[in-house]
Image (cartoon, one colour):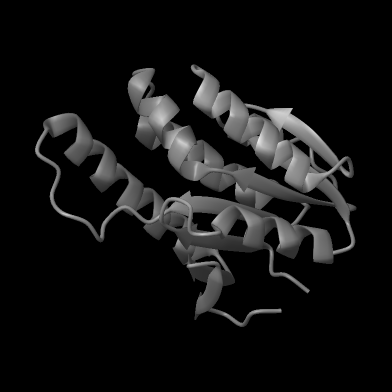
Length: 173
């Protein structure tokens, strides 16, 4: 049984989404996928199709690049929600000049209010070099804070590297 909130972290192409999807599928609840990606080019379109094909047809998909807190308000206790991913959501906020602090508070409040268990996928971006431009540094710092805020609330935090999960907090099911 998964806790109320699970955070799955990893680098790009680490296997974090596939691992998170398997956690959700194994829960035996109605599956809701909150997709935060925005499709701006063919490469992203292909990635979205690949993810949809991997998930199969048992998912209800909500495409919501900004108002993830609102999407959570639609979940019921017979469901489990996968948000994939917090990194793209944060990117959308920053590039759209939204109030990141306000949106983060809204997300954290929505997590508390949501009757369904939630699994959030996010990138770990703090293990590389210091970016050479202000926007990249702003993003890296904001992503680090967001991951810490979510991890503080989570009952399970998992790092995925090379497709292998490592529990950082809590116990793997």
